[in-house]
Length: 158
Image (cartoon, rainbow, N blue to C red; front, top):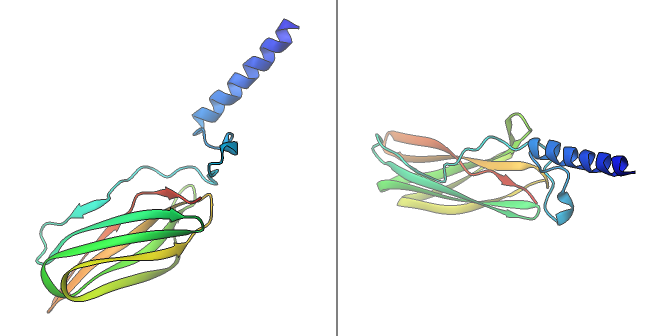
């Protein structure tokens, strides 16, 4: 009898250890948290960027907020002085478990004759997947066109 109980305990511990070694996310989703449908992507954090070597483009930032069924992507692009056009093109990306893929079409926000753009885009997401924003920040002034790509933090859609 004691051997049977010991064997059950050992198997339970083994299941817990295997789960933890595999990321610890799949088995215990009964606590109300969203269960991921893929492995998590590699960490990459770049929430604020400052650019050097440009005539106009100065810096940018991205903030991502998960709202059940959608994601709000807030962007800021700044230039060193007032430019003809300042903008940000937002592309939502989903992690497949091995690669990032574009989801839906991109959305562009622009402002004219200013040095600062701040705006947001709402995108539809599916629960259980990891998402990020790929944003191309850009400025145009006279014959000068400058741009940089920035990625947001990763968010698990709930």
